[in-house]
Image 1 (tube, rainbow, N blue to C red):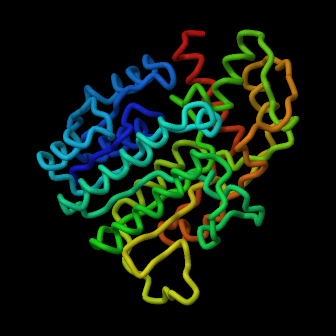
Image 2: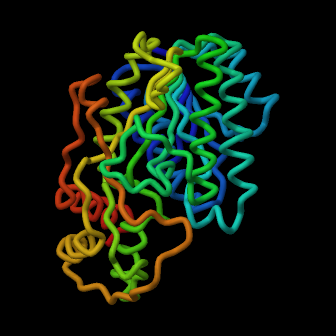
Image 3: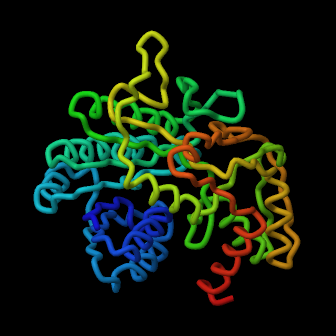
Length: 336
């Protein structure tokens, strides 16, 4: 059993990861600043599920608070750190860019420094499929270059990968970066399409469908994300002896550093997602077709061969099952 720091523990993915680790018997220190990017009461409700569990300890801290983060690392001596705290959202990064610098860059630097000085055995951090940016070769592979982000959010996630590699190279810190592909499920984020569509359809309001619905996403159910993290957690990366500076592989390194995609490996058309959601809700959506938004990728599709090779696991929850689980949770949570 390990003592594990989970940042963003009141967030969607962080909550599910912390819950899984606690049920496995680990000691989990959860950290979150409970900001108001979306409904704080939802974050508090997630925490209310974690706080009664044995082995859970919560700190309300901002990752950008350097003295307090340094103090936390000094006092707690974590063996594993899972950094899931970040300012999310492609579209919000067009409105409030400074929030992404403070959380995703300054905050992540403080995490790296904490891991370095306290000799953490394995750092796992959240990246994003957004880093693929202008790439059009499908499926997206961690071994392809990703030097053309199309949103500031994506740029900060790419920067996280570069920063993490630097610390792995300089200090021998074992680091695993995970590029998540459109995560959904119970306790999800209200700013994500599935949640906002459900909310609007039940309120008999029109849903905004960007790029006239001509988008495909590798929707990945939350339990599959958690399973991937749990399996990789106990497999800290080692240097790749075949790595060559003449033909550098972005997904591995001569340092103990690896990048993985975690996606369902089955892109779904946005209009099909809406059809499935309508079936689960028993209601028809009023659709407002709109042009594409700046920063949006038209299609995402994860190559997960490396994940399968390393862990023996491939995400496989169908959109029909995953959406039904989300709708069941939504009705229960909101008392519908």
